[in-house]
Amino acid sequence: MVTSKTNTPSQTAIWLAMLSVYIAWGSTYLAIRFSIETIPPFLMAGFRFLIAGGLLYLFRRLKGDPAPARIHWKNAVLIAALLLVGANGVVSWAEQRVVSGISALMVASAPLFMVVLGIAVPFFRKKSPKPSWPALFGVALGFVGIIILIGPASLFGQESNVDPIGAAALSLAAFSWAFGSLYSRSAELPESPLLGTGMEMLCGGFLLLLVGTLTGEWSRFDLAAISQRSLLGMLYLVVFGSLVGYSAYTWLIRVAPTTLVSTYAYVNPIVALVIGSLLGQESFSSQTIVASVIIVSAVAIITLTQASAKKPTPSYELDPVPVQDDCP
Image (cartoon, rainbow, N blue to C red; front, side):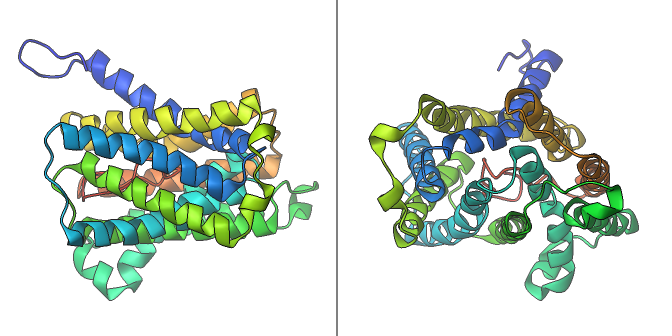
């Protein structure tokens, strides 16, 4: 990143990094949709995270990070099961039934579940700040938006484009992401966030391949049948979704205001909707547009009212992985 002579980052550098987070993370949903066209979803996600995690882990070890302890690997496996299998893997599966823009909207509801878990689960309640009334209003508003998004389309005089099974899977993914994010805050992990993320990606990659094996995806995997669009989509996820986007985010949370960095939580769904429409030819009903406004507004309320109390934890597509309290 470009910095001034006083080592203070320039506004240009900060906004270039913010744009990379907005675009890299917001576009991953469409890249997933392209990738799973000819690659089974759990296997695709497994390959993706094995490659990205292996590169990141090797890079940090070569940079001098000490070897992780056994407890670090144990926590990495648990966090990977929640974030990369229960969230990323399920999102990849759900995008067989739900378009990328709506998938992004559903996953954006993770901050709602984080607030609810922080209230309902004693272990998390002890470690989470008490939510403000605006945050609670944001939670209620967000769930209203979700109900509108997946509710009866007859209220709007048209057919809904949200598959109920896919919507249920995406809700589960958002819940799993929220649970894993909260757990990762107090989990014992390496001091280096990038090393910890590399570990989680490696563990998640192996777990996702195991899930793909158990669900019979190898019988549907044909190396010769992989399209150029699917291959490019997966490479995009590895490079821009996992490596570039994450690196930019970890730099930003150290040099930029929390309120600015946290805007990714409600900008990314908008970016995903726009990119899905322009590049993926995805169409959205008035029901989706109304729900989008409500959900994004709710996430913005929750994020901004809690940003002053703690640094942001991502709710996005789950590309970067929360490794510590201040890392995604």
